[in-house]
Image 1 (cartoon, helix red, strand yellow):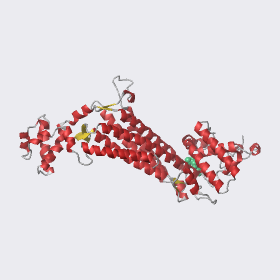
Image 2 (cartoon, rainbow, N blue to C red; image 1 turned 90 degrees about the horizontal axis):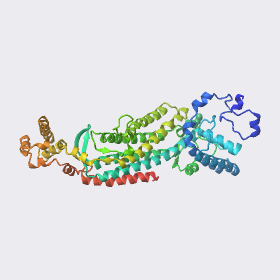
Image 3 (cartoon, rainbow, N blue to C red; image 1 turned 30 degrees about the vertical axis):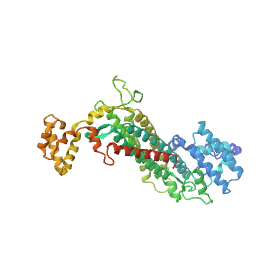
Image 4 (cartoon, rainbow, N blue to C red; image 1 turned 45 degrees about the vertical axis):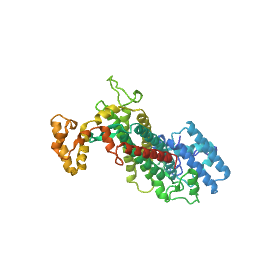
Length: 487
Ligand code: ARG
């Protein structure tokens, strides 16, 4: 086959058939047969074929607009639209096939339209470039991804909130530096994650707003000489606004960065939760255990029961952080406007969205099913050392400056440790020997439930504070659900 034949421009039988579109969209300018290695290297079809439904939807809206401004006749529009609807059906049923020469999903859809509708297919690309087309498709995809992520996120928030409600007053040690620090409740601890995932919801909502701008009508970079009705296309595709600058429109991928970054931070939160689950389900902590259906075993050690899902949530966060870096790196050196580098935007974006959605769904199941050993947590929370700060604050209430109180209690801690005793072993007299500001109440400070009740400051782990936080958590979940519903 001659090079011209392969690119579909010169063979008499093609001209006679009339229906086949030249294999390459640039065949008028470049007549040589395209290297197969180049085709393999430049093709993005394996990645971007998931934009197919959005590509067809965008093309249908574009075609309707071309009809409305008189570029297409009614018959031409009918033929194009029928072809596009057939392609949409092929895509959704999975029978759409790609050809080796298809460079990306946009050229694949256009090729198929030629096959189905004949030469009239050649009118669809009027006033449009793949540059504004791909930016539009990707924004449509990303906008829907934000919604899907918000649905998954609301589920995770709700699971955490439910478990927090069950354990509103169950004491456990809170940690700093992974050393036991002060008493908190399991409910308080879990609600910290509802706050984190609540902020993720706001970021995903903001990312969706960033997606909500229509590039189509910007052409390759400089708009069009045709009187394109961009507002009409925006309205049809559900975009809130049209991009104000054609050069920005085709070169901008900020929305993809913002969504990927929102995913990365969500994954960091998932990772931290995963780390807690790994720690808590270790024999050293013994605070939690996964049902067998959500645990994994060892191929060698018969006794093992591992929290692999939590470890993978932790491990995969690294990849999504990498996705943000990959995307920013693609953008950082690009002169305006479109450069082929931008084709590399999809893998990190898709990966970030897929990984984050799957991780949130997995953690929702895990958090709903994890069994907490509240007795073990209570035993750990009863460690008298956790009350050292409360004892210092007891002195503060009796007029001792905090720094001085800290030193006094610190010295008592050091002495009891040296003597192999705990703070709870000291008599009132021994406390009074350390400071005459101690009264008889000091020996009653060690009950973890009482310690929780003392910490009812707004935002604290006290029972009333946690009740207020639970009410707030309900508003966070409701807000996330509203955002998921598009509100
Ligand atoms: N596959 C390309 C991408 O994802 C589509 C745009 C191609 N535009 C071009 N001028 N080569 O970016």
